[in-house]
Amino acid sequence: MFKDLIGKQSSKVKNVVERGAVKKFVEAIGDLHPIYFDEDTGRLSRYKNNLAPPTPTFPRVLDYGVIEGFHLPDKGLIHGEESYHYERPLMVGEEVYCYSIVKKYSEKKGSFGEMGFLVLESFGEDLDGNTIFSSISTIVISEAVKRGMEK
Image 1: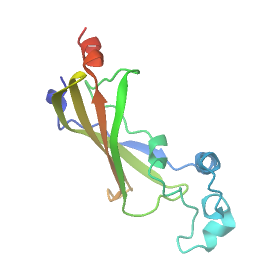
Image 2: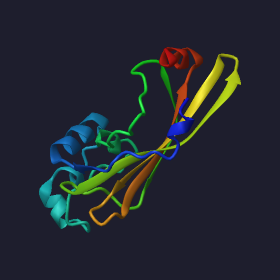
Image 3: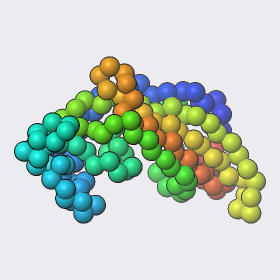
């Protein structure tokens, strides 16, 4: 089903780590350390800037573009394993170029029928093309959802 998309990549999308988005995020997770939103604290830190929280999920607010021909339904998918790796912190105000790649797809029979396992790898890079962070996500597609997609 998705095997022909393996290796396809979205075009890189420029994102800006916005101060307002960072503030809303840290308020939502209850981590109000001033390094995230207080400009004086950021300026006086070793990074000379405010940081986005180093939580694994903050990069989910960024835009990773569209992989041509790749479409998933809005309902019925199962969130599988997910991992993130940071090379360095994200800075408030910096431009980050994000994209995703379809890494692999496999199917396995189980007690709920034939399930699909789709692996996406996503990246955030700085202006020079250096990786800031990466993530690997597995999406589980049930047999019922797969049948609905084939129609």
